[in-house]
Length: 199
Image (cartoon, rainbow, N blue to C red):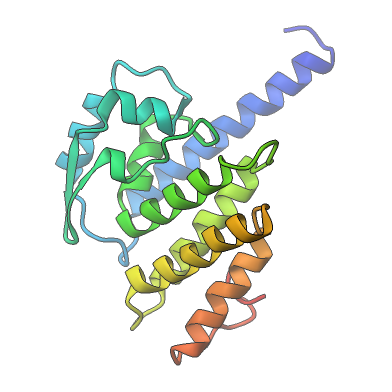
């Protein structure tokens, strides 16, 4: 590869992609206790349904390929089309990234709503780091013991979508963290400064 700006950018992008894939694989191996139980067999079936797809793939491409495929969890059965945005604004690097999203249906639905709302804005920039921060905030909110994670995640997603429609811009990731922390406090749960939501 040439040692020029394009070559260095490609190397950096490739390393970033490999690092994300390692993080996803590590998280899938560890498993989070707070996540709804989605069996490995259900995830393997989904990944098999995505074999014909080239990655990275957008939510729209995932829906076109496997939108009718259903994945069961302790929360019930969810069609893939209900968990991914019908938009080109967000992409997934590998089948493992798709599986990671599916493991938490409440978070997946929230991200679908946020991405589809953002996609309605002309020239809106909603980059990968902002996607990751939003998803991390939704995950942190769903991990708070004693909260109905669906209600908290849904409430904060409702707020984000309302902000997009009213202000015609996507709120910042820090604002989303603050809103999630406020929801926790309003429902009697402490949020420490050293936690993700402690802003």
